[in-house]
Image 1 (tube, rainbow, N blue to C red):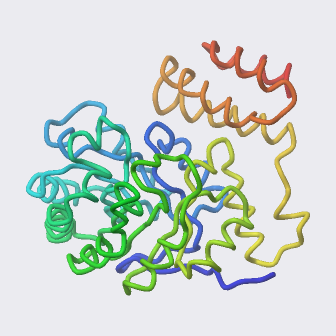
Image 2: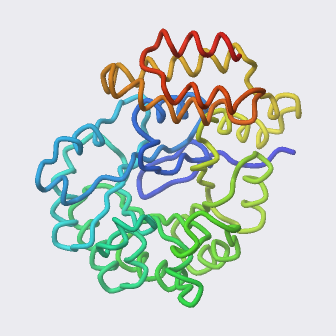
Amino acid sequence: MSMERNGFQIGNVQIPGRVVLGPMAGVTDLPFRLLCKEQGAALIYTEMVSAKGLMYENVRTESLLTVNPEERPVSLQLFGSDPQVMGEMAGRLSERAFDILDINMGCPAPKIAGKGEGSALMKDPDRAFAIVENCVKNAGRPVSVKIRSGFDKNHLNAVEMAKGIEAAGAAAIAVHGRTREQYYAGRADWTVIAAVKEAVSIPVIGNGDIRTPEDAERMFRETGCDAVMIARGARGNPWIFRQAQAFFDGAPETEWKRRPDAEELKATILRHADLQIAFKGDYIGIREMRKHVTWYTAGRPNSAKLRAEASKIESVEELKELLDRYL
C-alpha cells in the first residue's frame, strides 16, 4: 500500500521523510544516530543537553553536542527551566552545526522533573512559553518542542500547551501520548496527538508505542500527524526506519518485514562497537555496548544467557567471541 510520505518542513529545514528517531538519554549518542541515519531515519535527535551544563561548560556536555555532518538534518535537544538561561544558551549554540533546536518538556525522570525541568514544565505553561519565546529569539534556526499529553491524568493539557507553544514561535511540536505519571507504562493515547494536530497549524510529530511499520502507518491514519517519532522501538533495531520507509513506498511484504539475519546482526553490532570506541574510547565504548547488545539480541534463542555474558564484556575481542558463539 503506497502512501505519500515524502517529507515535510520544520521552519526552513526540509526533512526528507516522515519517520524520525526520537531523543533518548544514554541511547541516541553519535554512533547510534549514525546507524539509524544509514537505515533511513529522516530526522535525528541528540540526547538531551542541560542548559546549565552548557553554561558551566561541563566536560560531558561537549560530547553530547558533537554532530557529524552525515547525520543532518539533526535536532539538538536542550532542557532547562530558566527562560533567561535557556535563551542565552540557545544563542551560544547558534554557532554549532545542527539544524533544529528542540526543547524538552517531556522527560519524566525524577532528577529532571524534580527540578522543574522536562515534563514538569507541563505544569507551568507561562514559564514554558517564556522559554520557547527566548529560544526562538536567540537560536537562529527553527525551534521545536517535545511535550507529553499532560503531567498526570487530571491535567491533560497538551492542546493548550501546543497552542501556547505555537504562539510563542515554535516551528513544530512532538507529542508523546502519555502523561508524566505514566512514564512509559500502559498504552500511549494517540487521541491526544490527533487533538493537538487539529489545534495547531505547525507540523505535529506523533510519538508513543511505534514498534513496527504497521504501527507507524496506523498512527498517521488515526492522528493525521505530519511525522512519526520512534524512540524505544529503535533500540537494538535501527532497521525499523528502513522497514517503515519500504512499507510506505509500497514495497512487497517480504522486503518491509525483512529482519537482519545473524550475519548482518553481528556485523551491525561490531560496527556499532567500533563507532562507540572511536567516539568514547576503549573503556567507556565497550561498556556502553553491553546494553545495546542486550537490545540487539532480545528475543533470539538463548538471549538470557547471552545477556548475562554481555553484561561482563570488556573488549571487542570478547564481544566478537560472544557473538560467534550465540549467533
